[in-house]
Amino acid sequence: MKFRTAFLKIGAVVALALGFLLVPSVAKAAPSCSSGYACYWKDAAYKTDGLMSDRVQFQWYIGTFYSHYYNDYTIYHSDNTATSLWNNGNTYGTRWYDGSSFTGSNFYVPINRGDSYLGDNGVTAPGGHNDKLSSACFTPYC
Ligand SMILES: [Ca+2]
Ligand SMILES: [Ca+2]
Image (cartoon, rainbow, N blue to C red; front, side, top):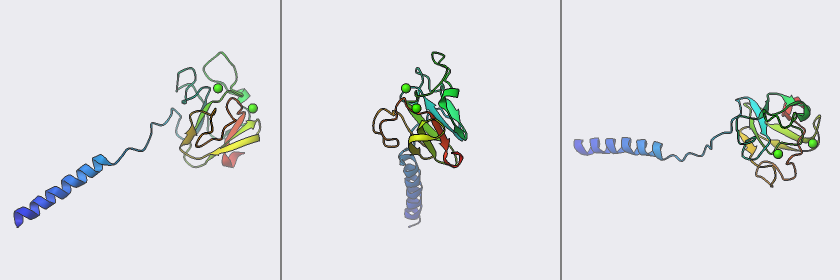
């Protein structure tokens, strides 16, 4: 009897350990975007010319993408260039606009979400915004 109890206890511990190991990993690798910021990239898959690290990021808002640029010095602005984006904020959702100063067609992206290719009708962002975005914000700031 004692042996059986001990065996069951060991079994329970092993089951717990296995259960822990078998929990499916649902978290995808987050794009390179600083905690508390939102980021956008010139190309798809959270990259600019192949580099995930080459992005524009902001904490509150950007009134015009024209005044911000990537390290890709072929263009000295990022207006109407964004093809992927990510909200790595901690508190607020973000809103992204085709026009500067938070005007025009727009869409909402919640925390820890993004869109790897604005050129299609994505889960997060609707279609029609690729290479059109001109301003963005965390929702309390626009
Ligand atoms: Ca682009
Ligand atoms: Ca625009």
